[in-house]
Length: 65
Image (cartoon, rainbow, N blue to C red; front, side, top):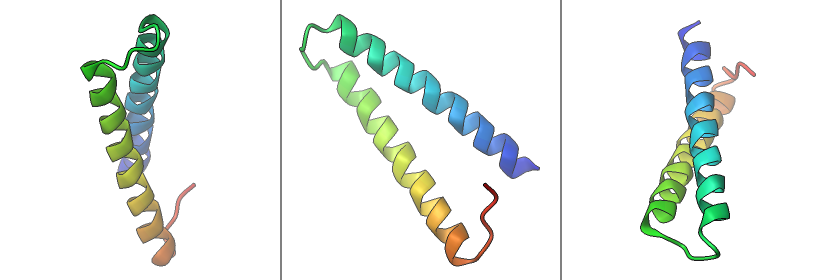
């Protein structure tokens, strides 16, 4: 059950970051700012972590999708 709460919390945080990034990109007139880069890096790190968790769980046959 804790795994689901963590997964839901991660998804909410991811959605917030994605929304913020999209808003910033819309407002930037094509200029990539430091804030946009930072958010992109955080999103990349989250994606990498979740991919590693999924691959580990899949390898150990413990996925809960």
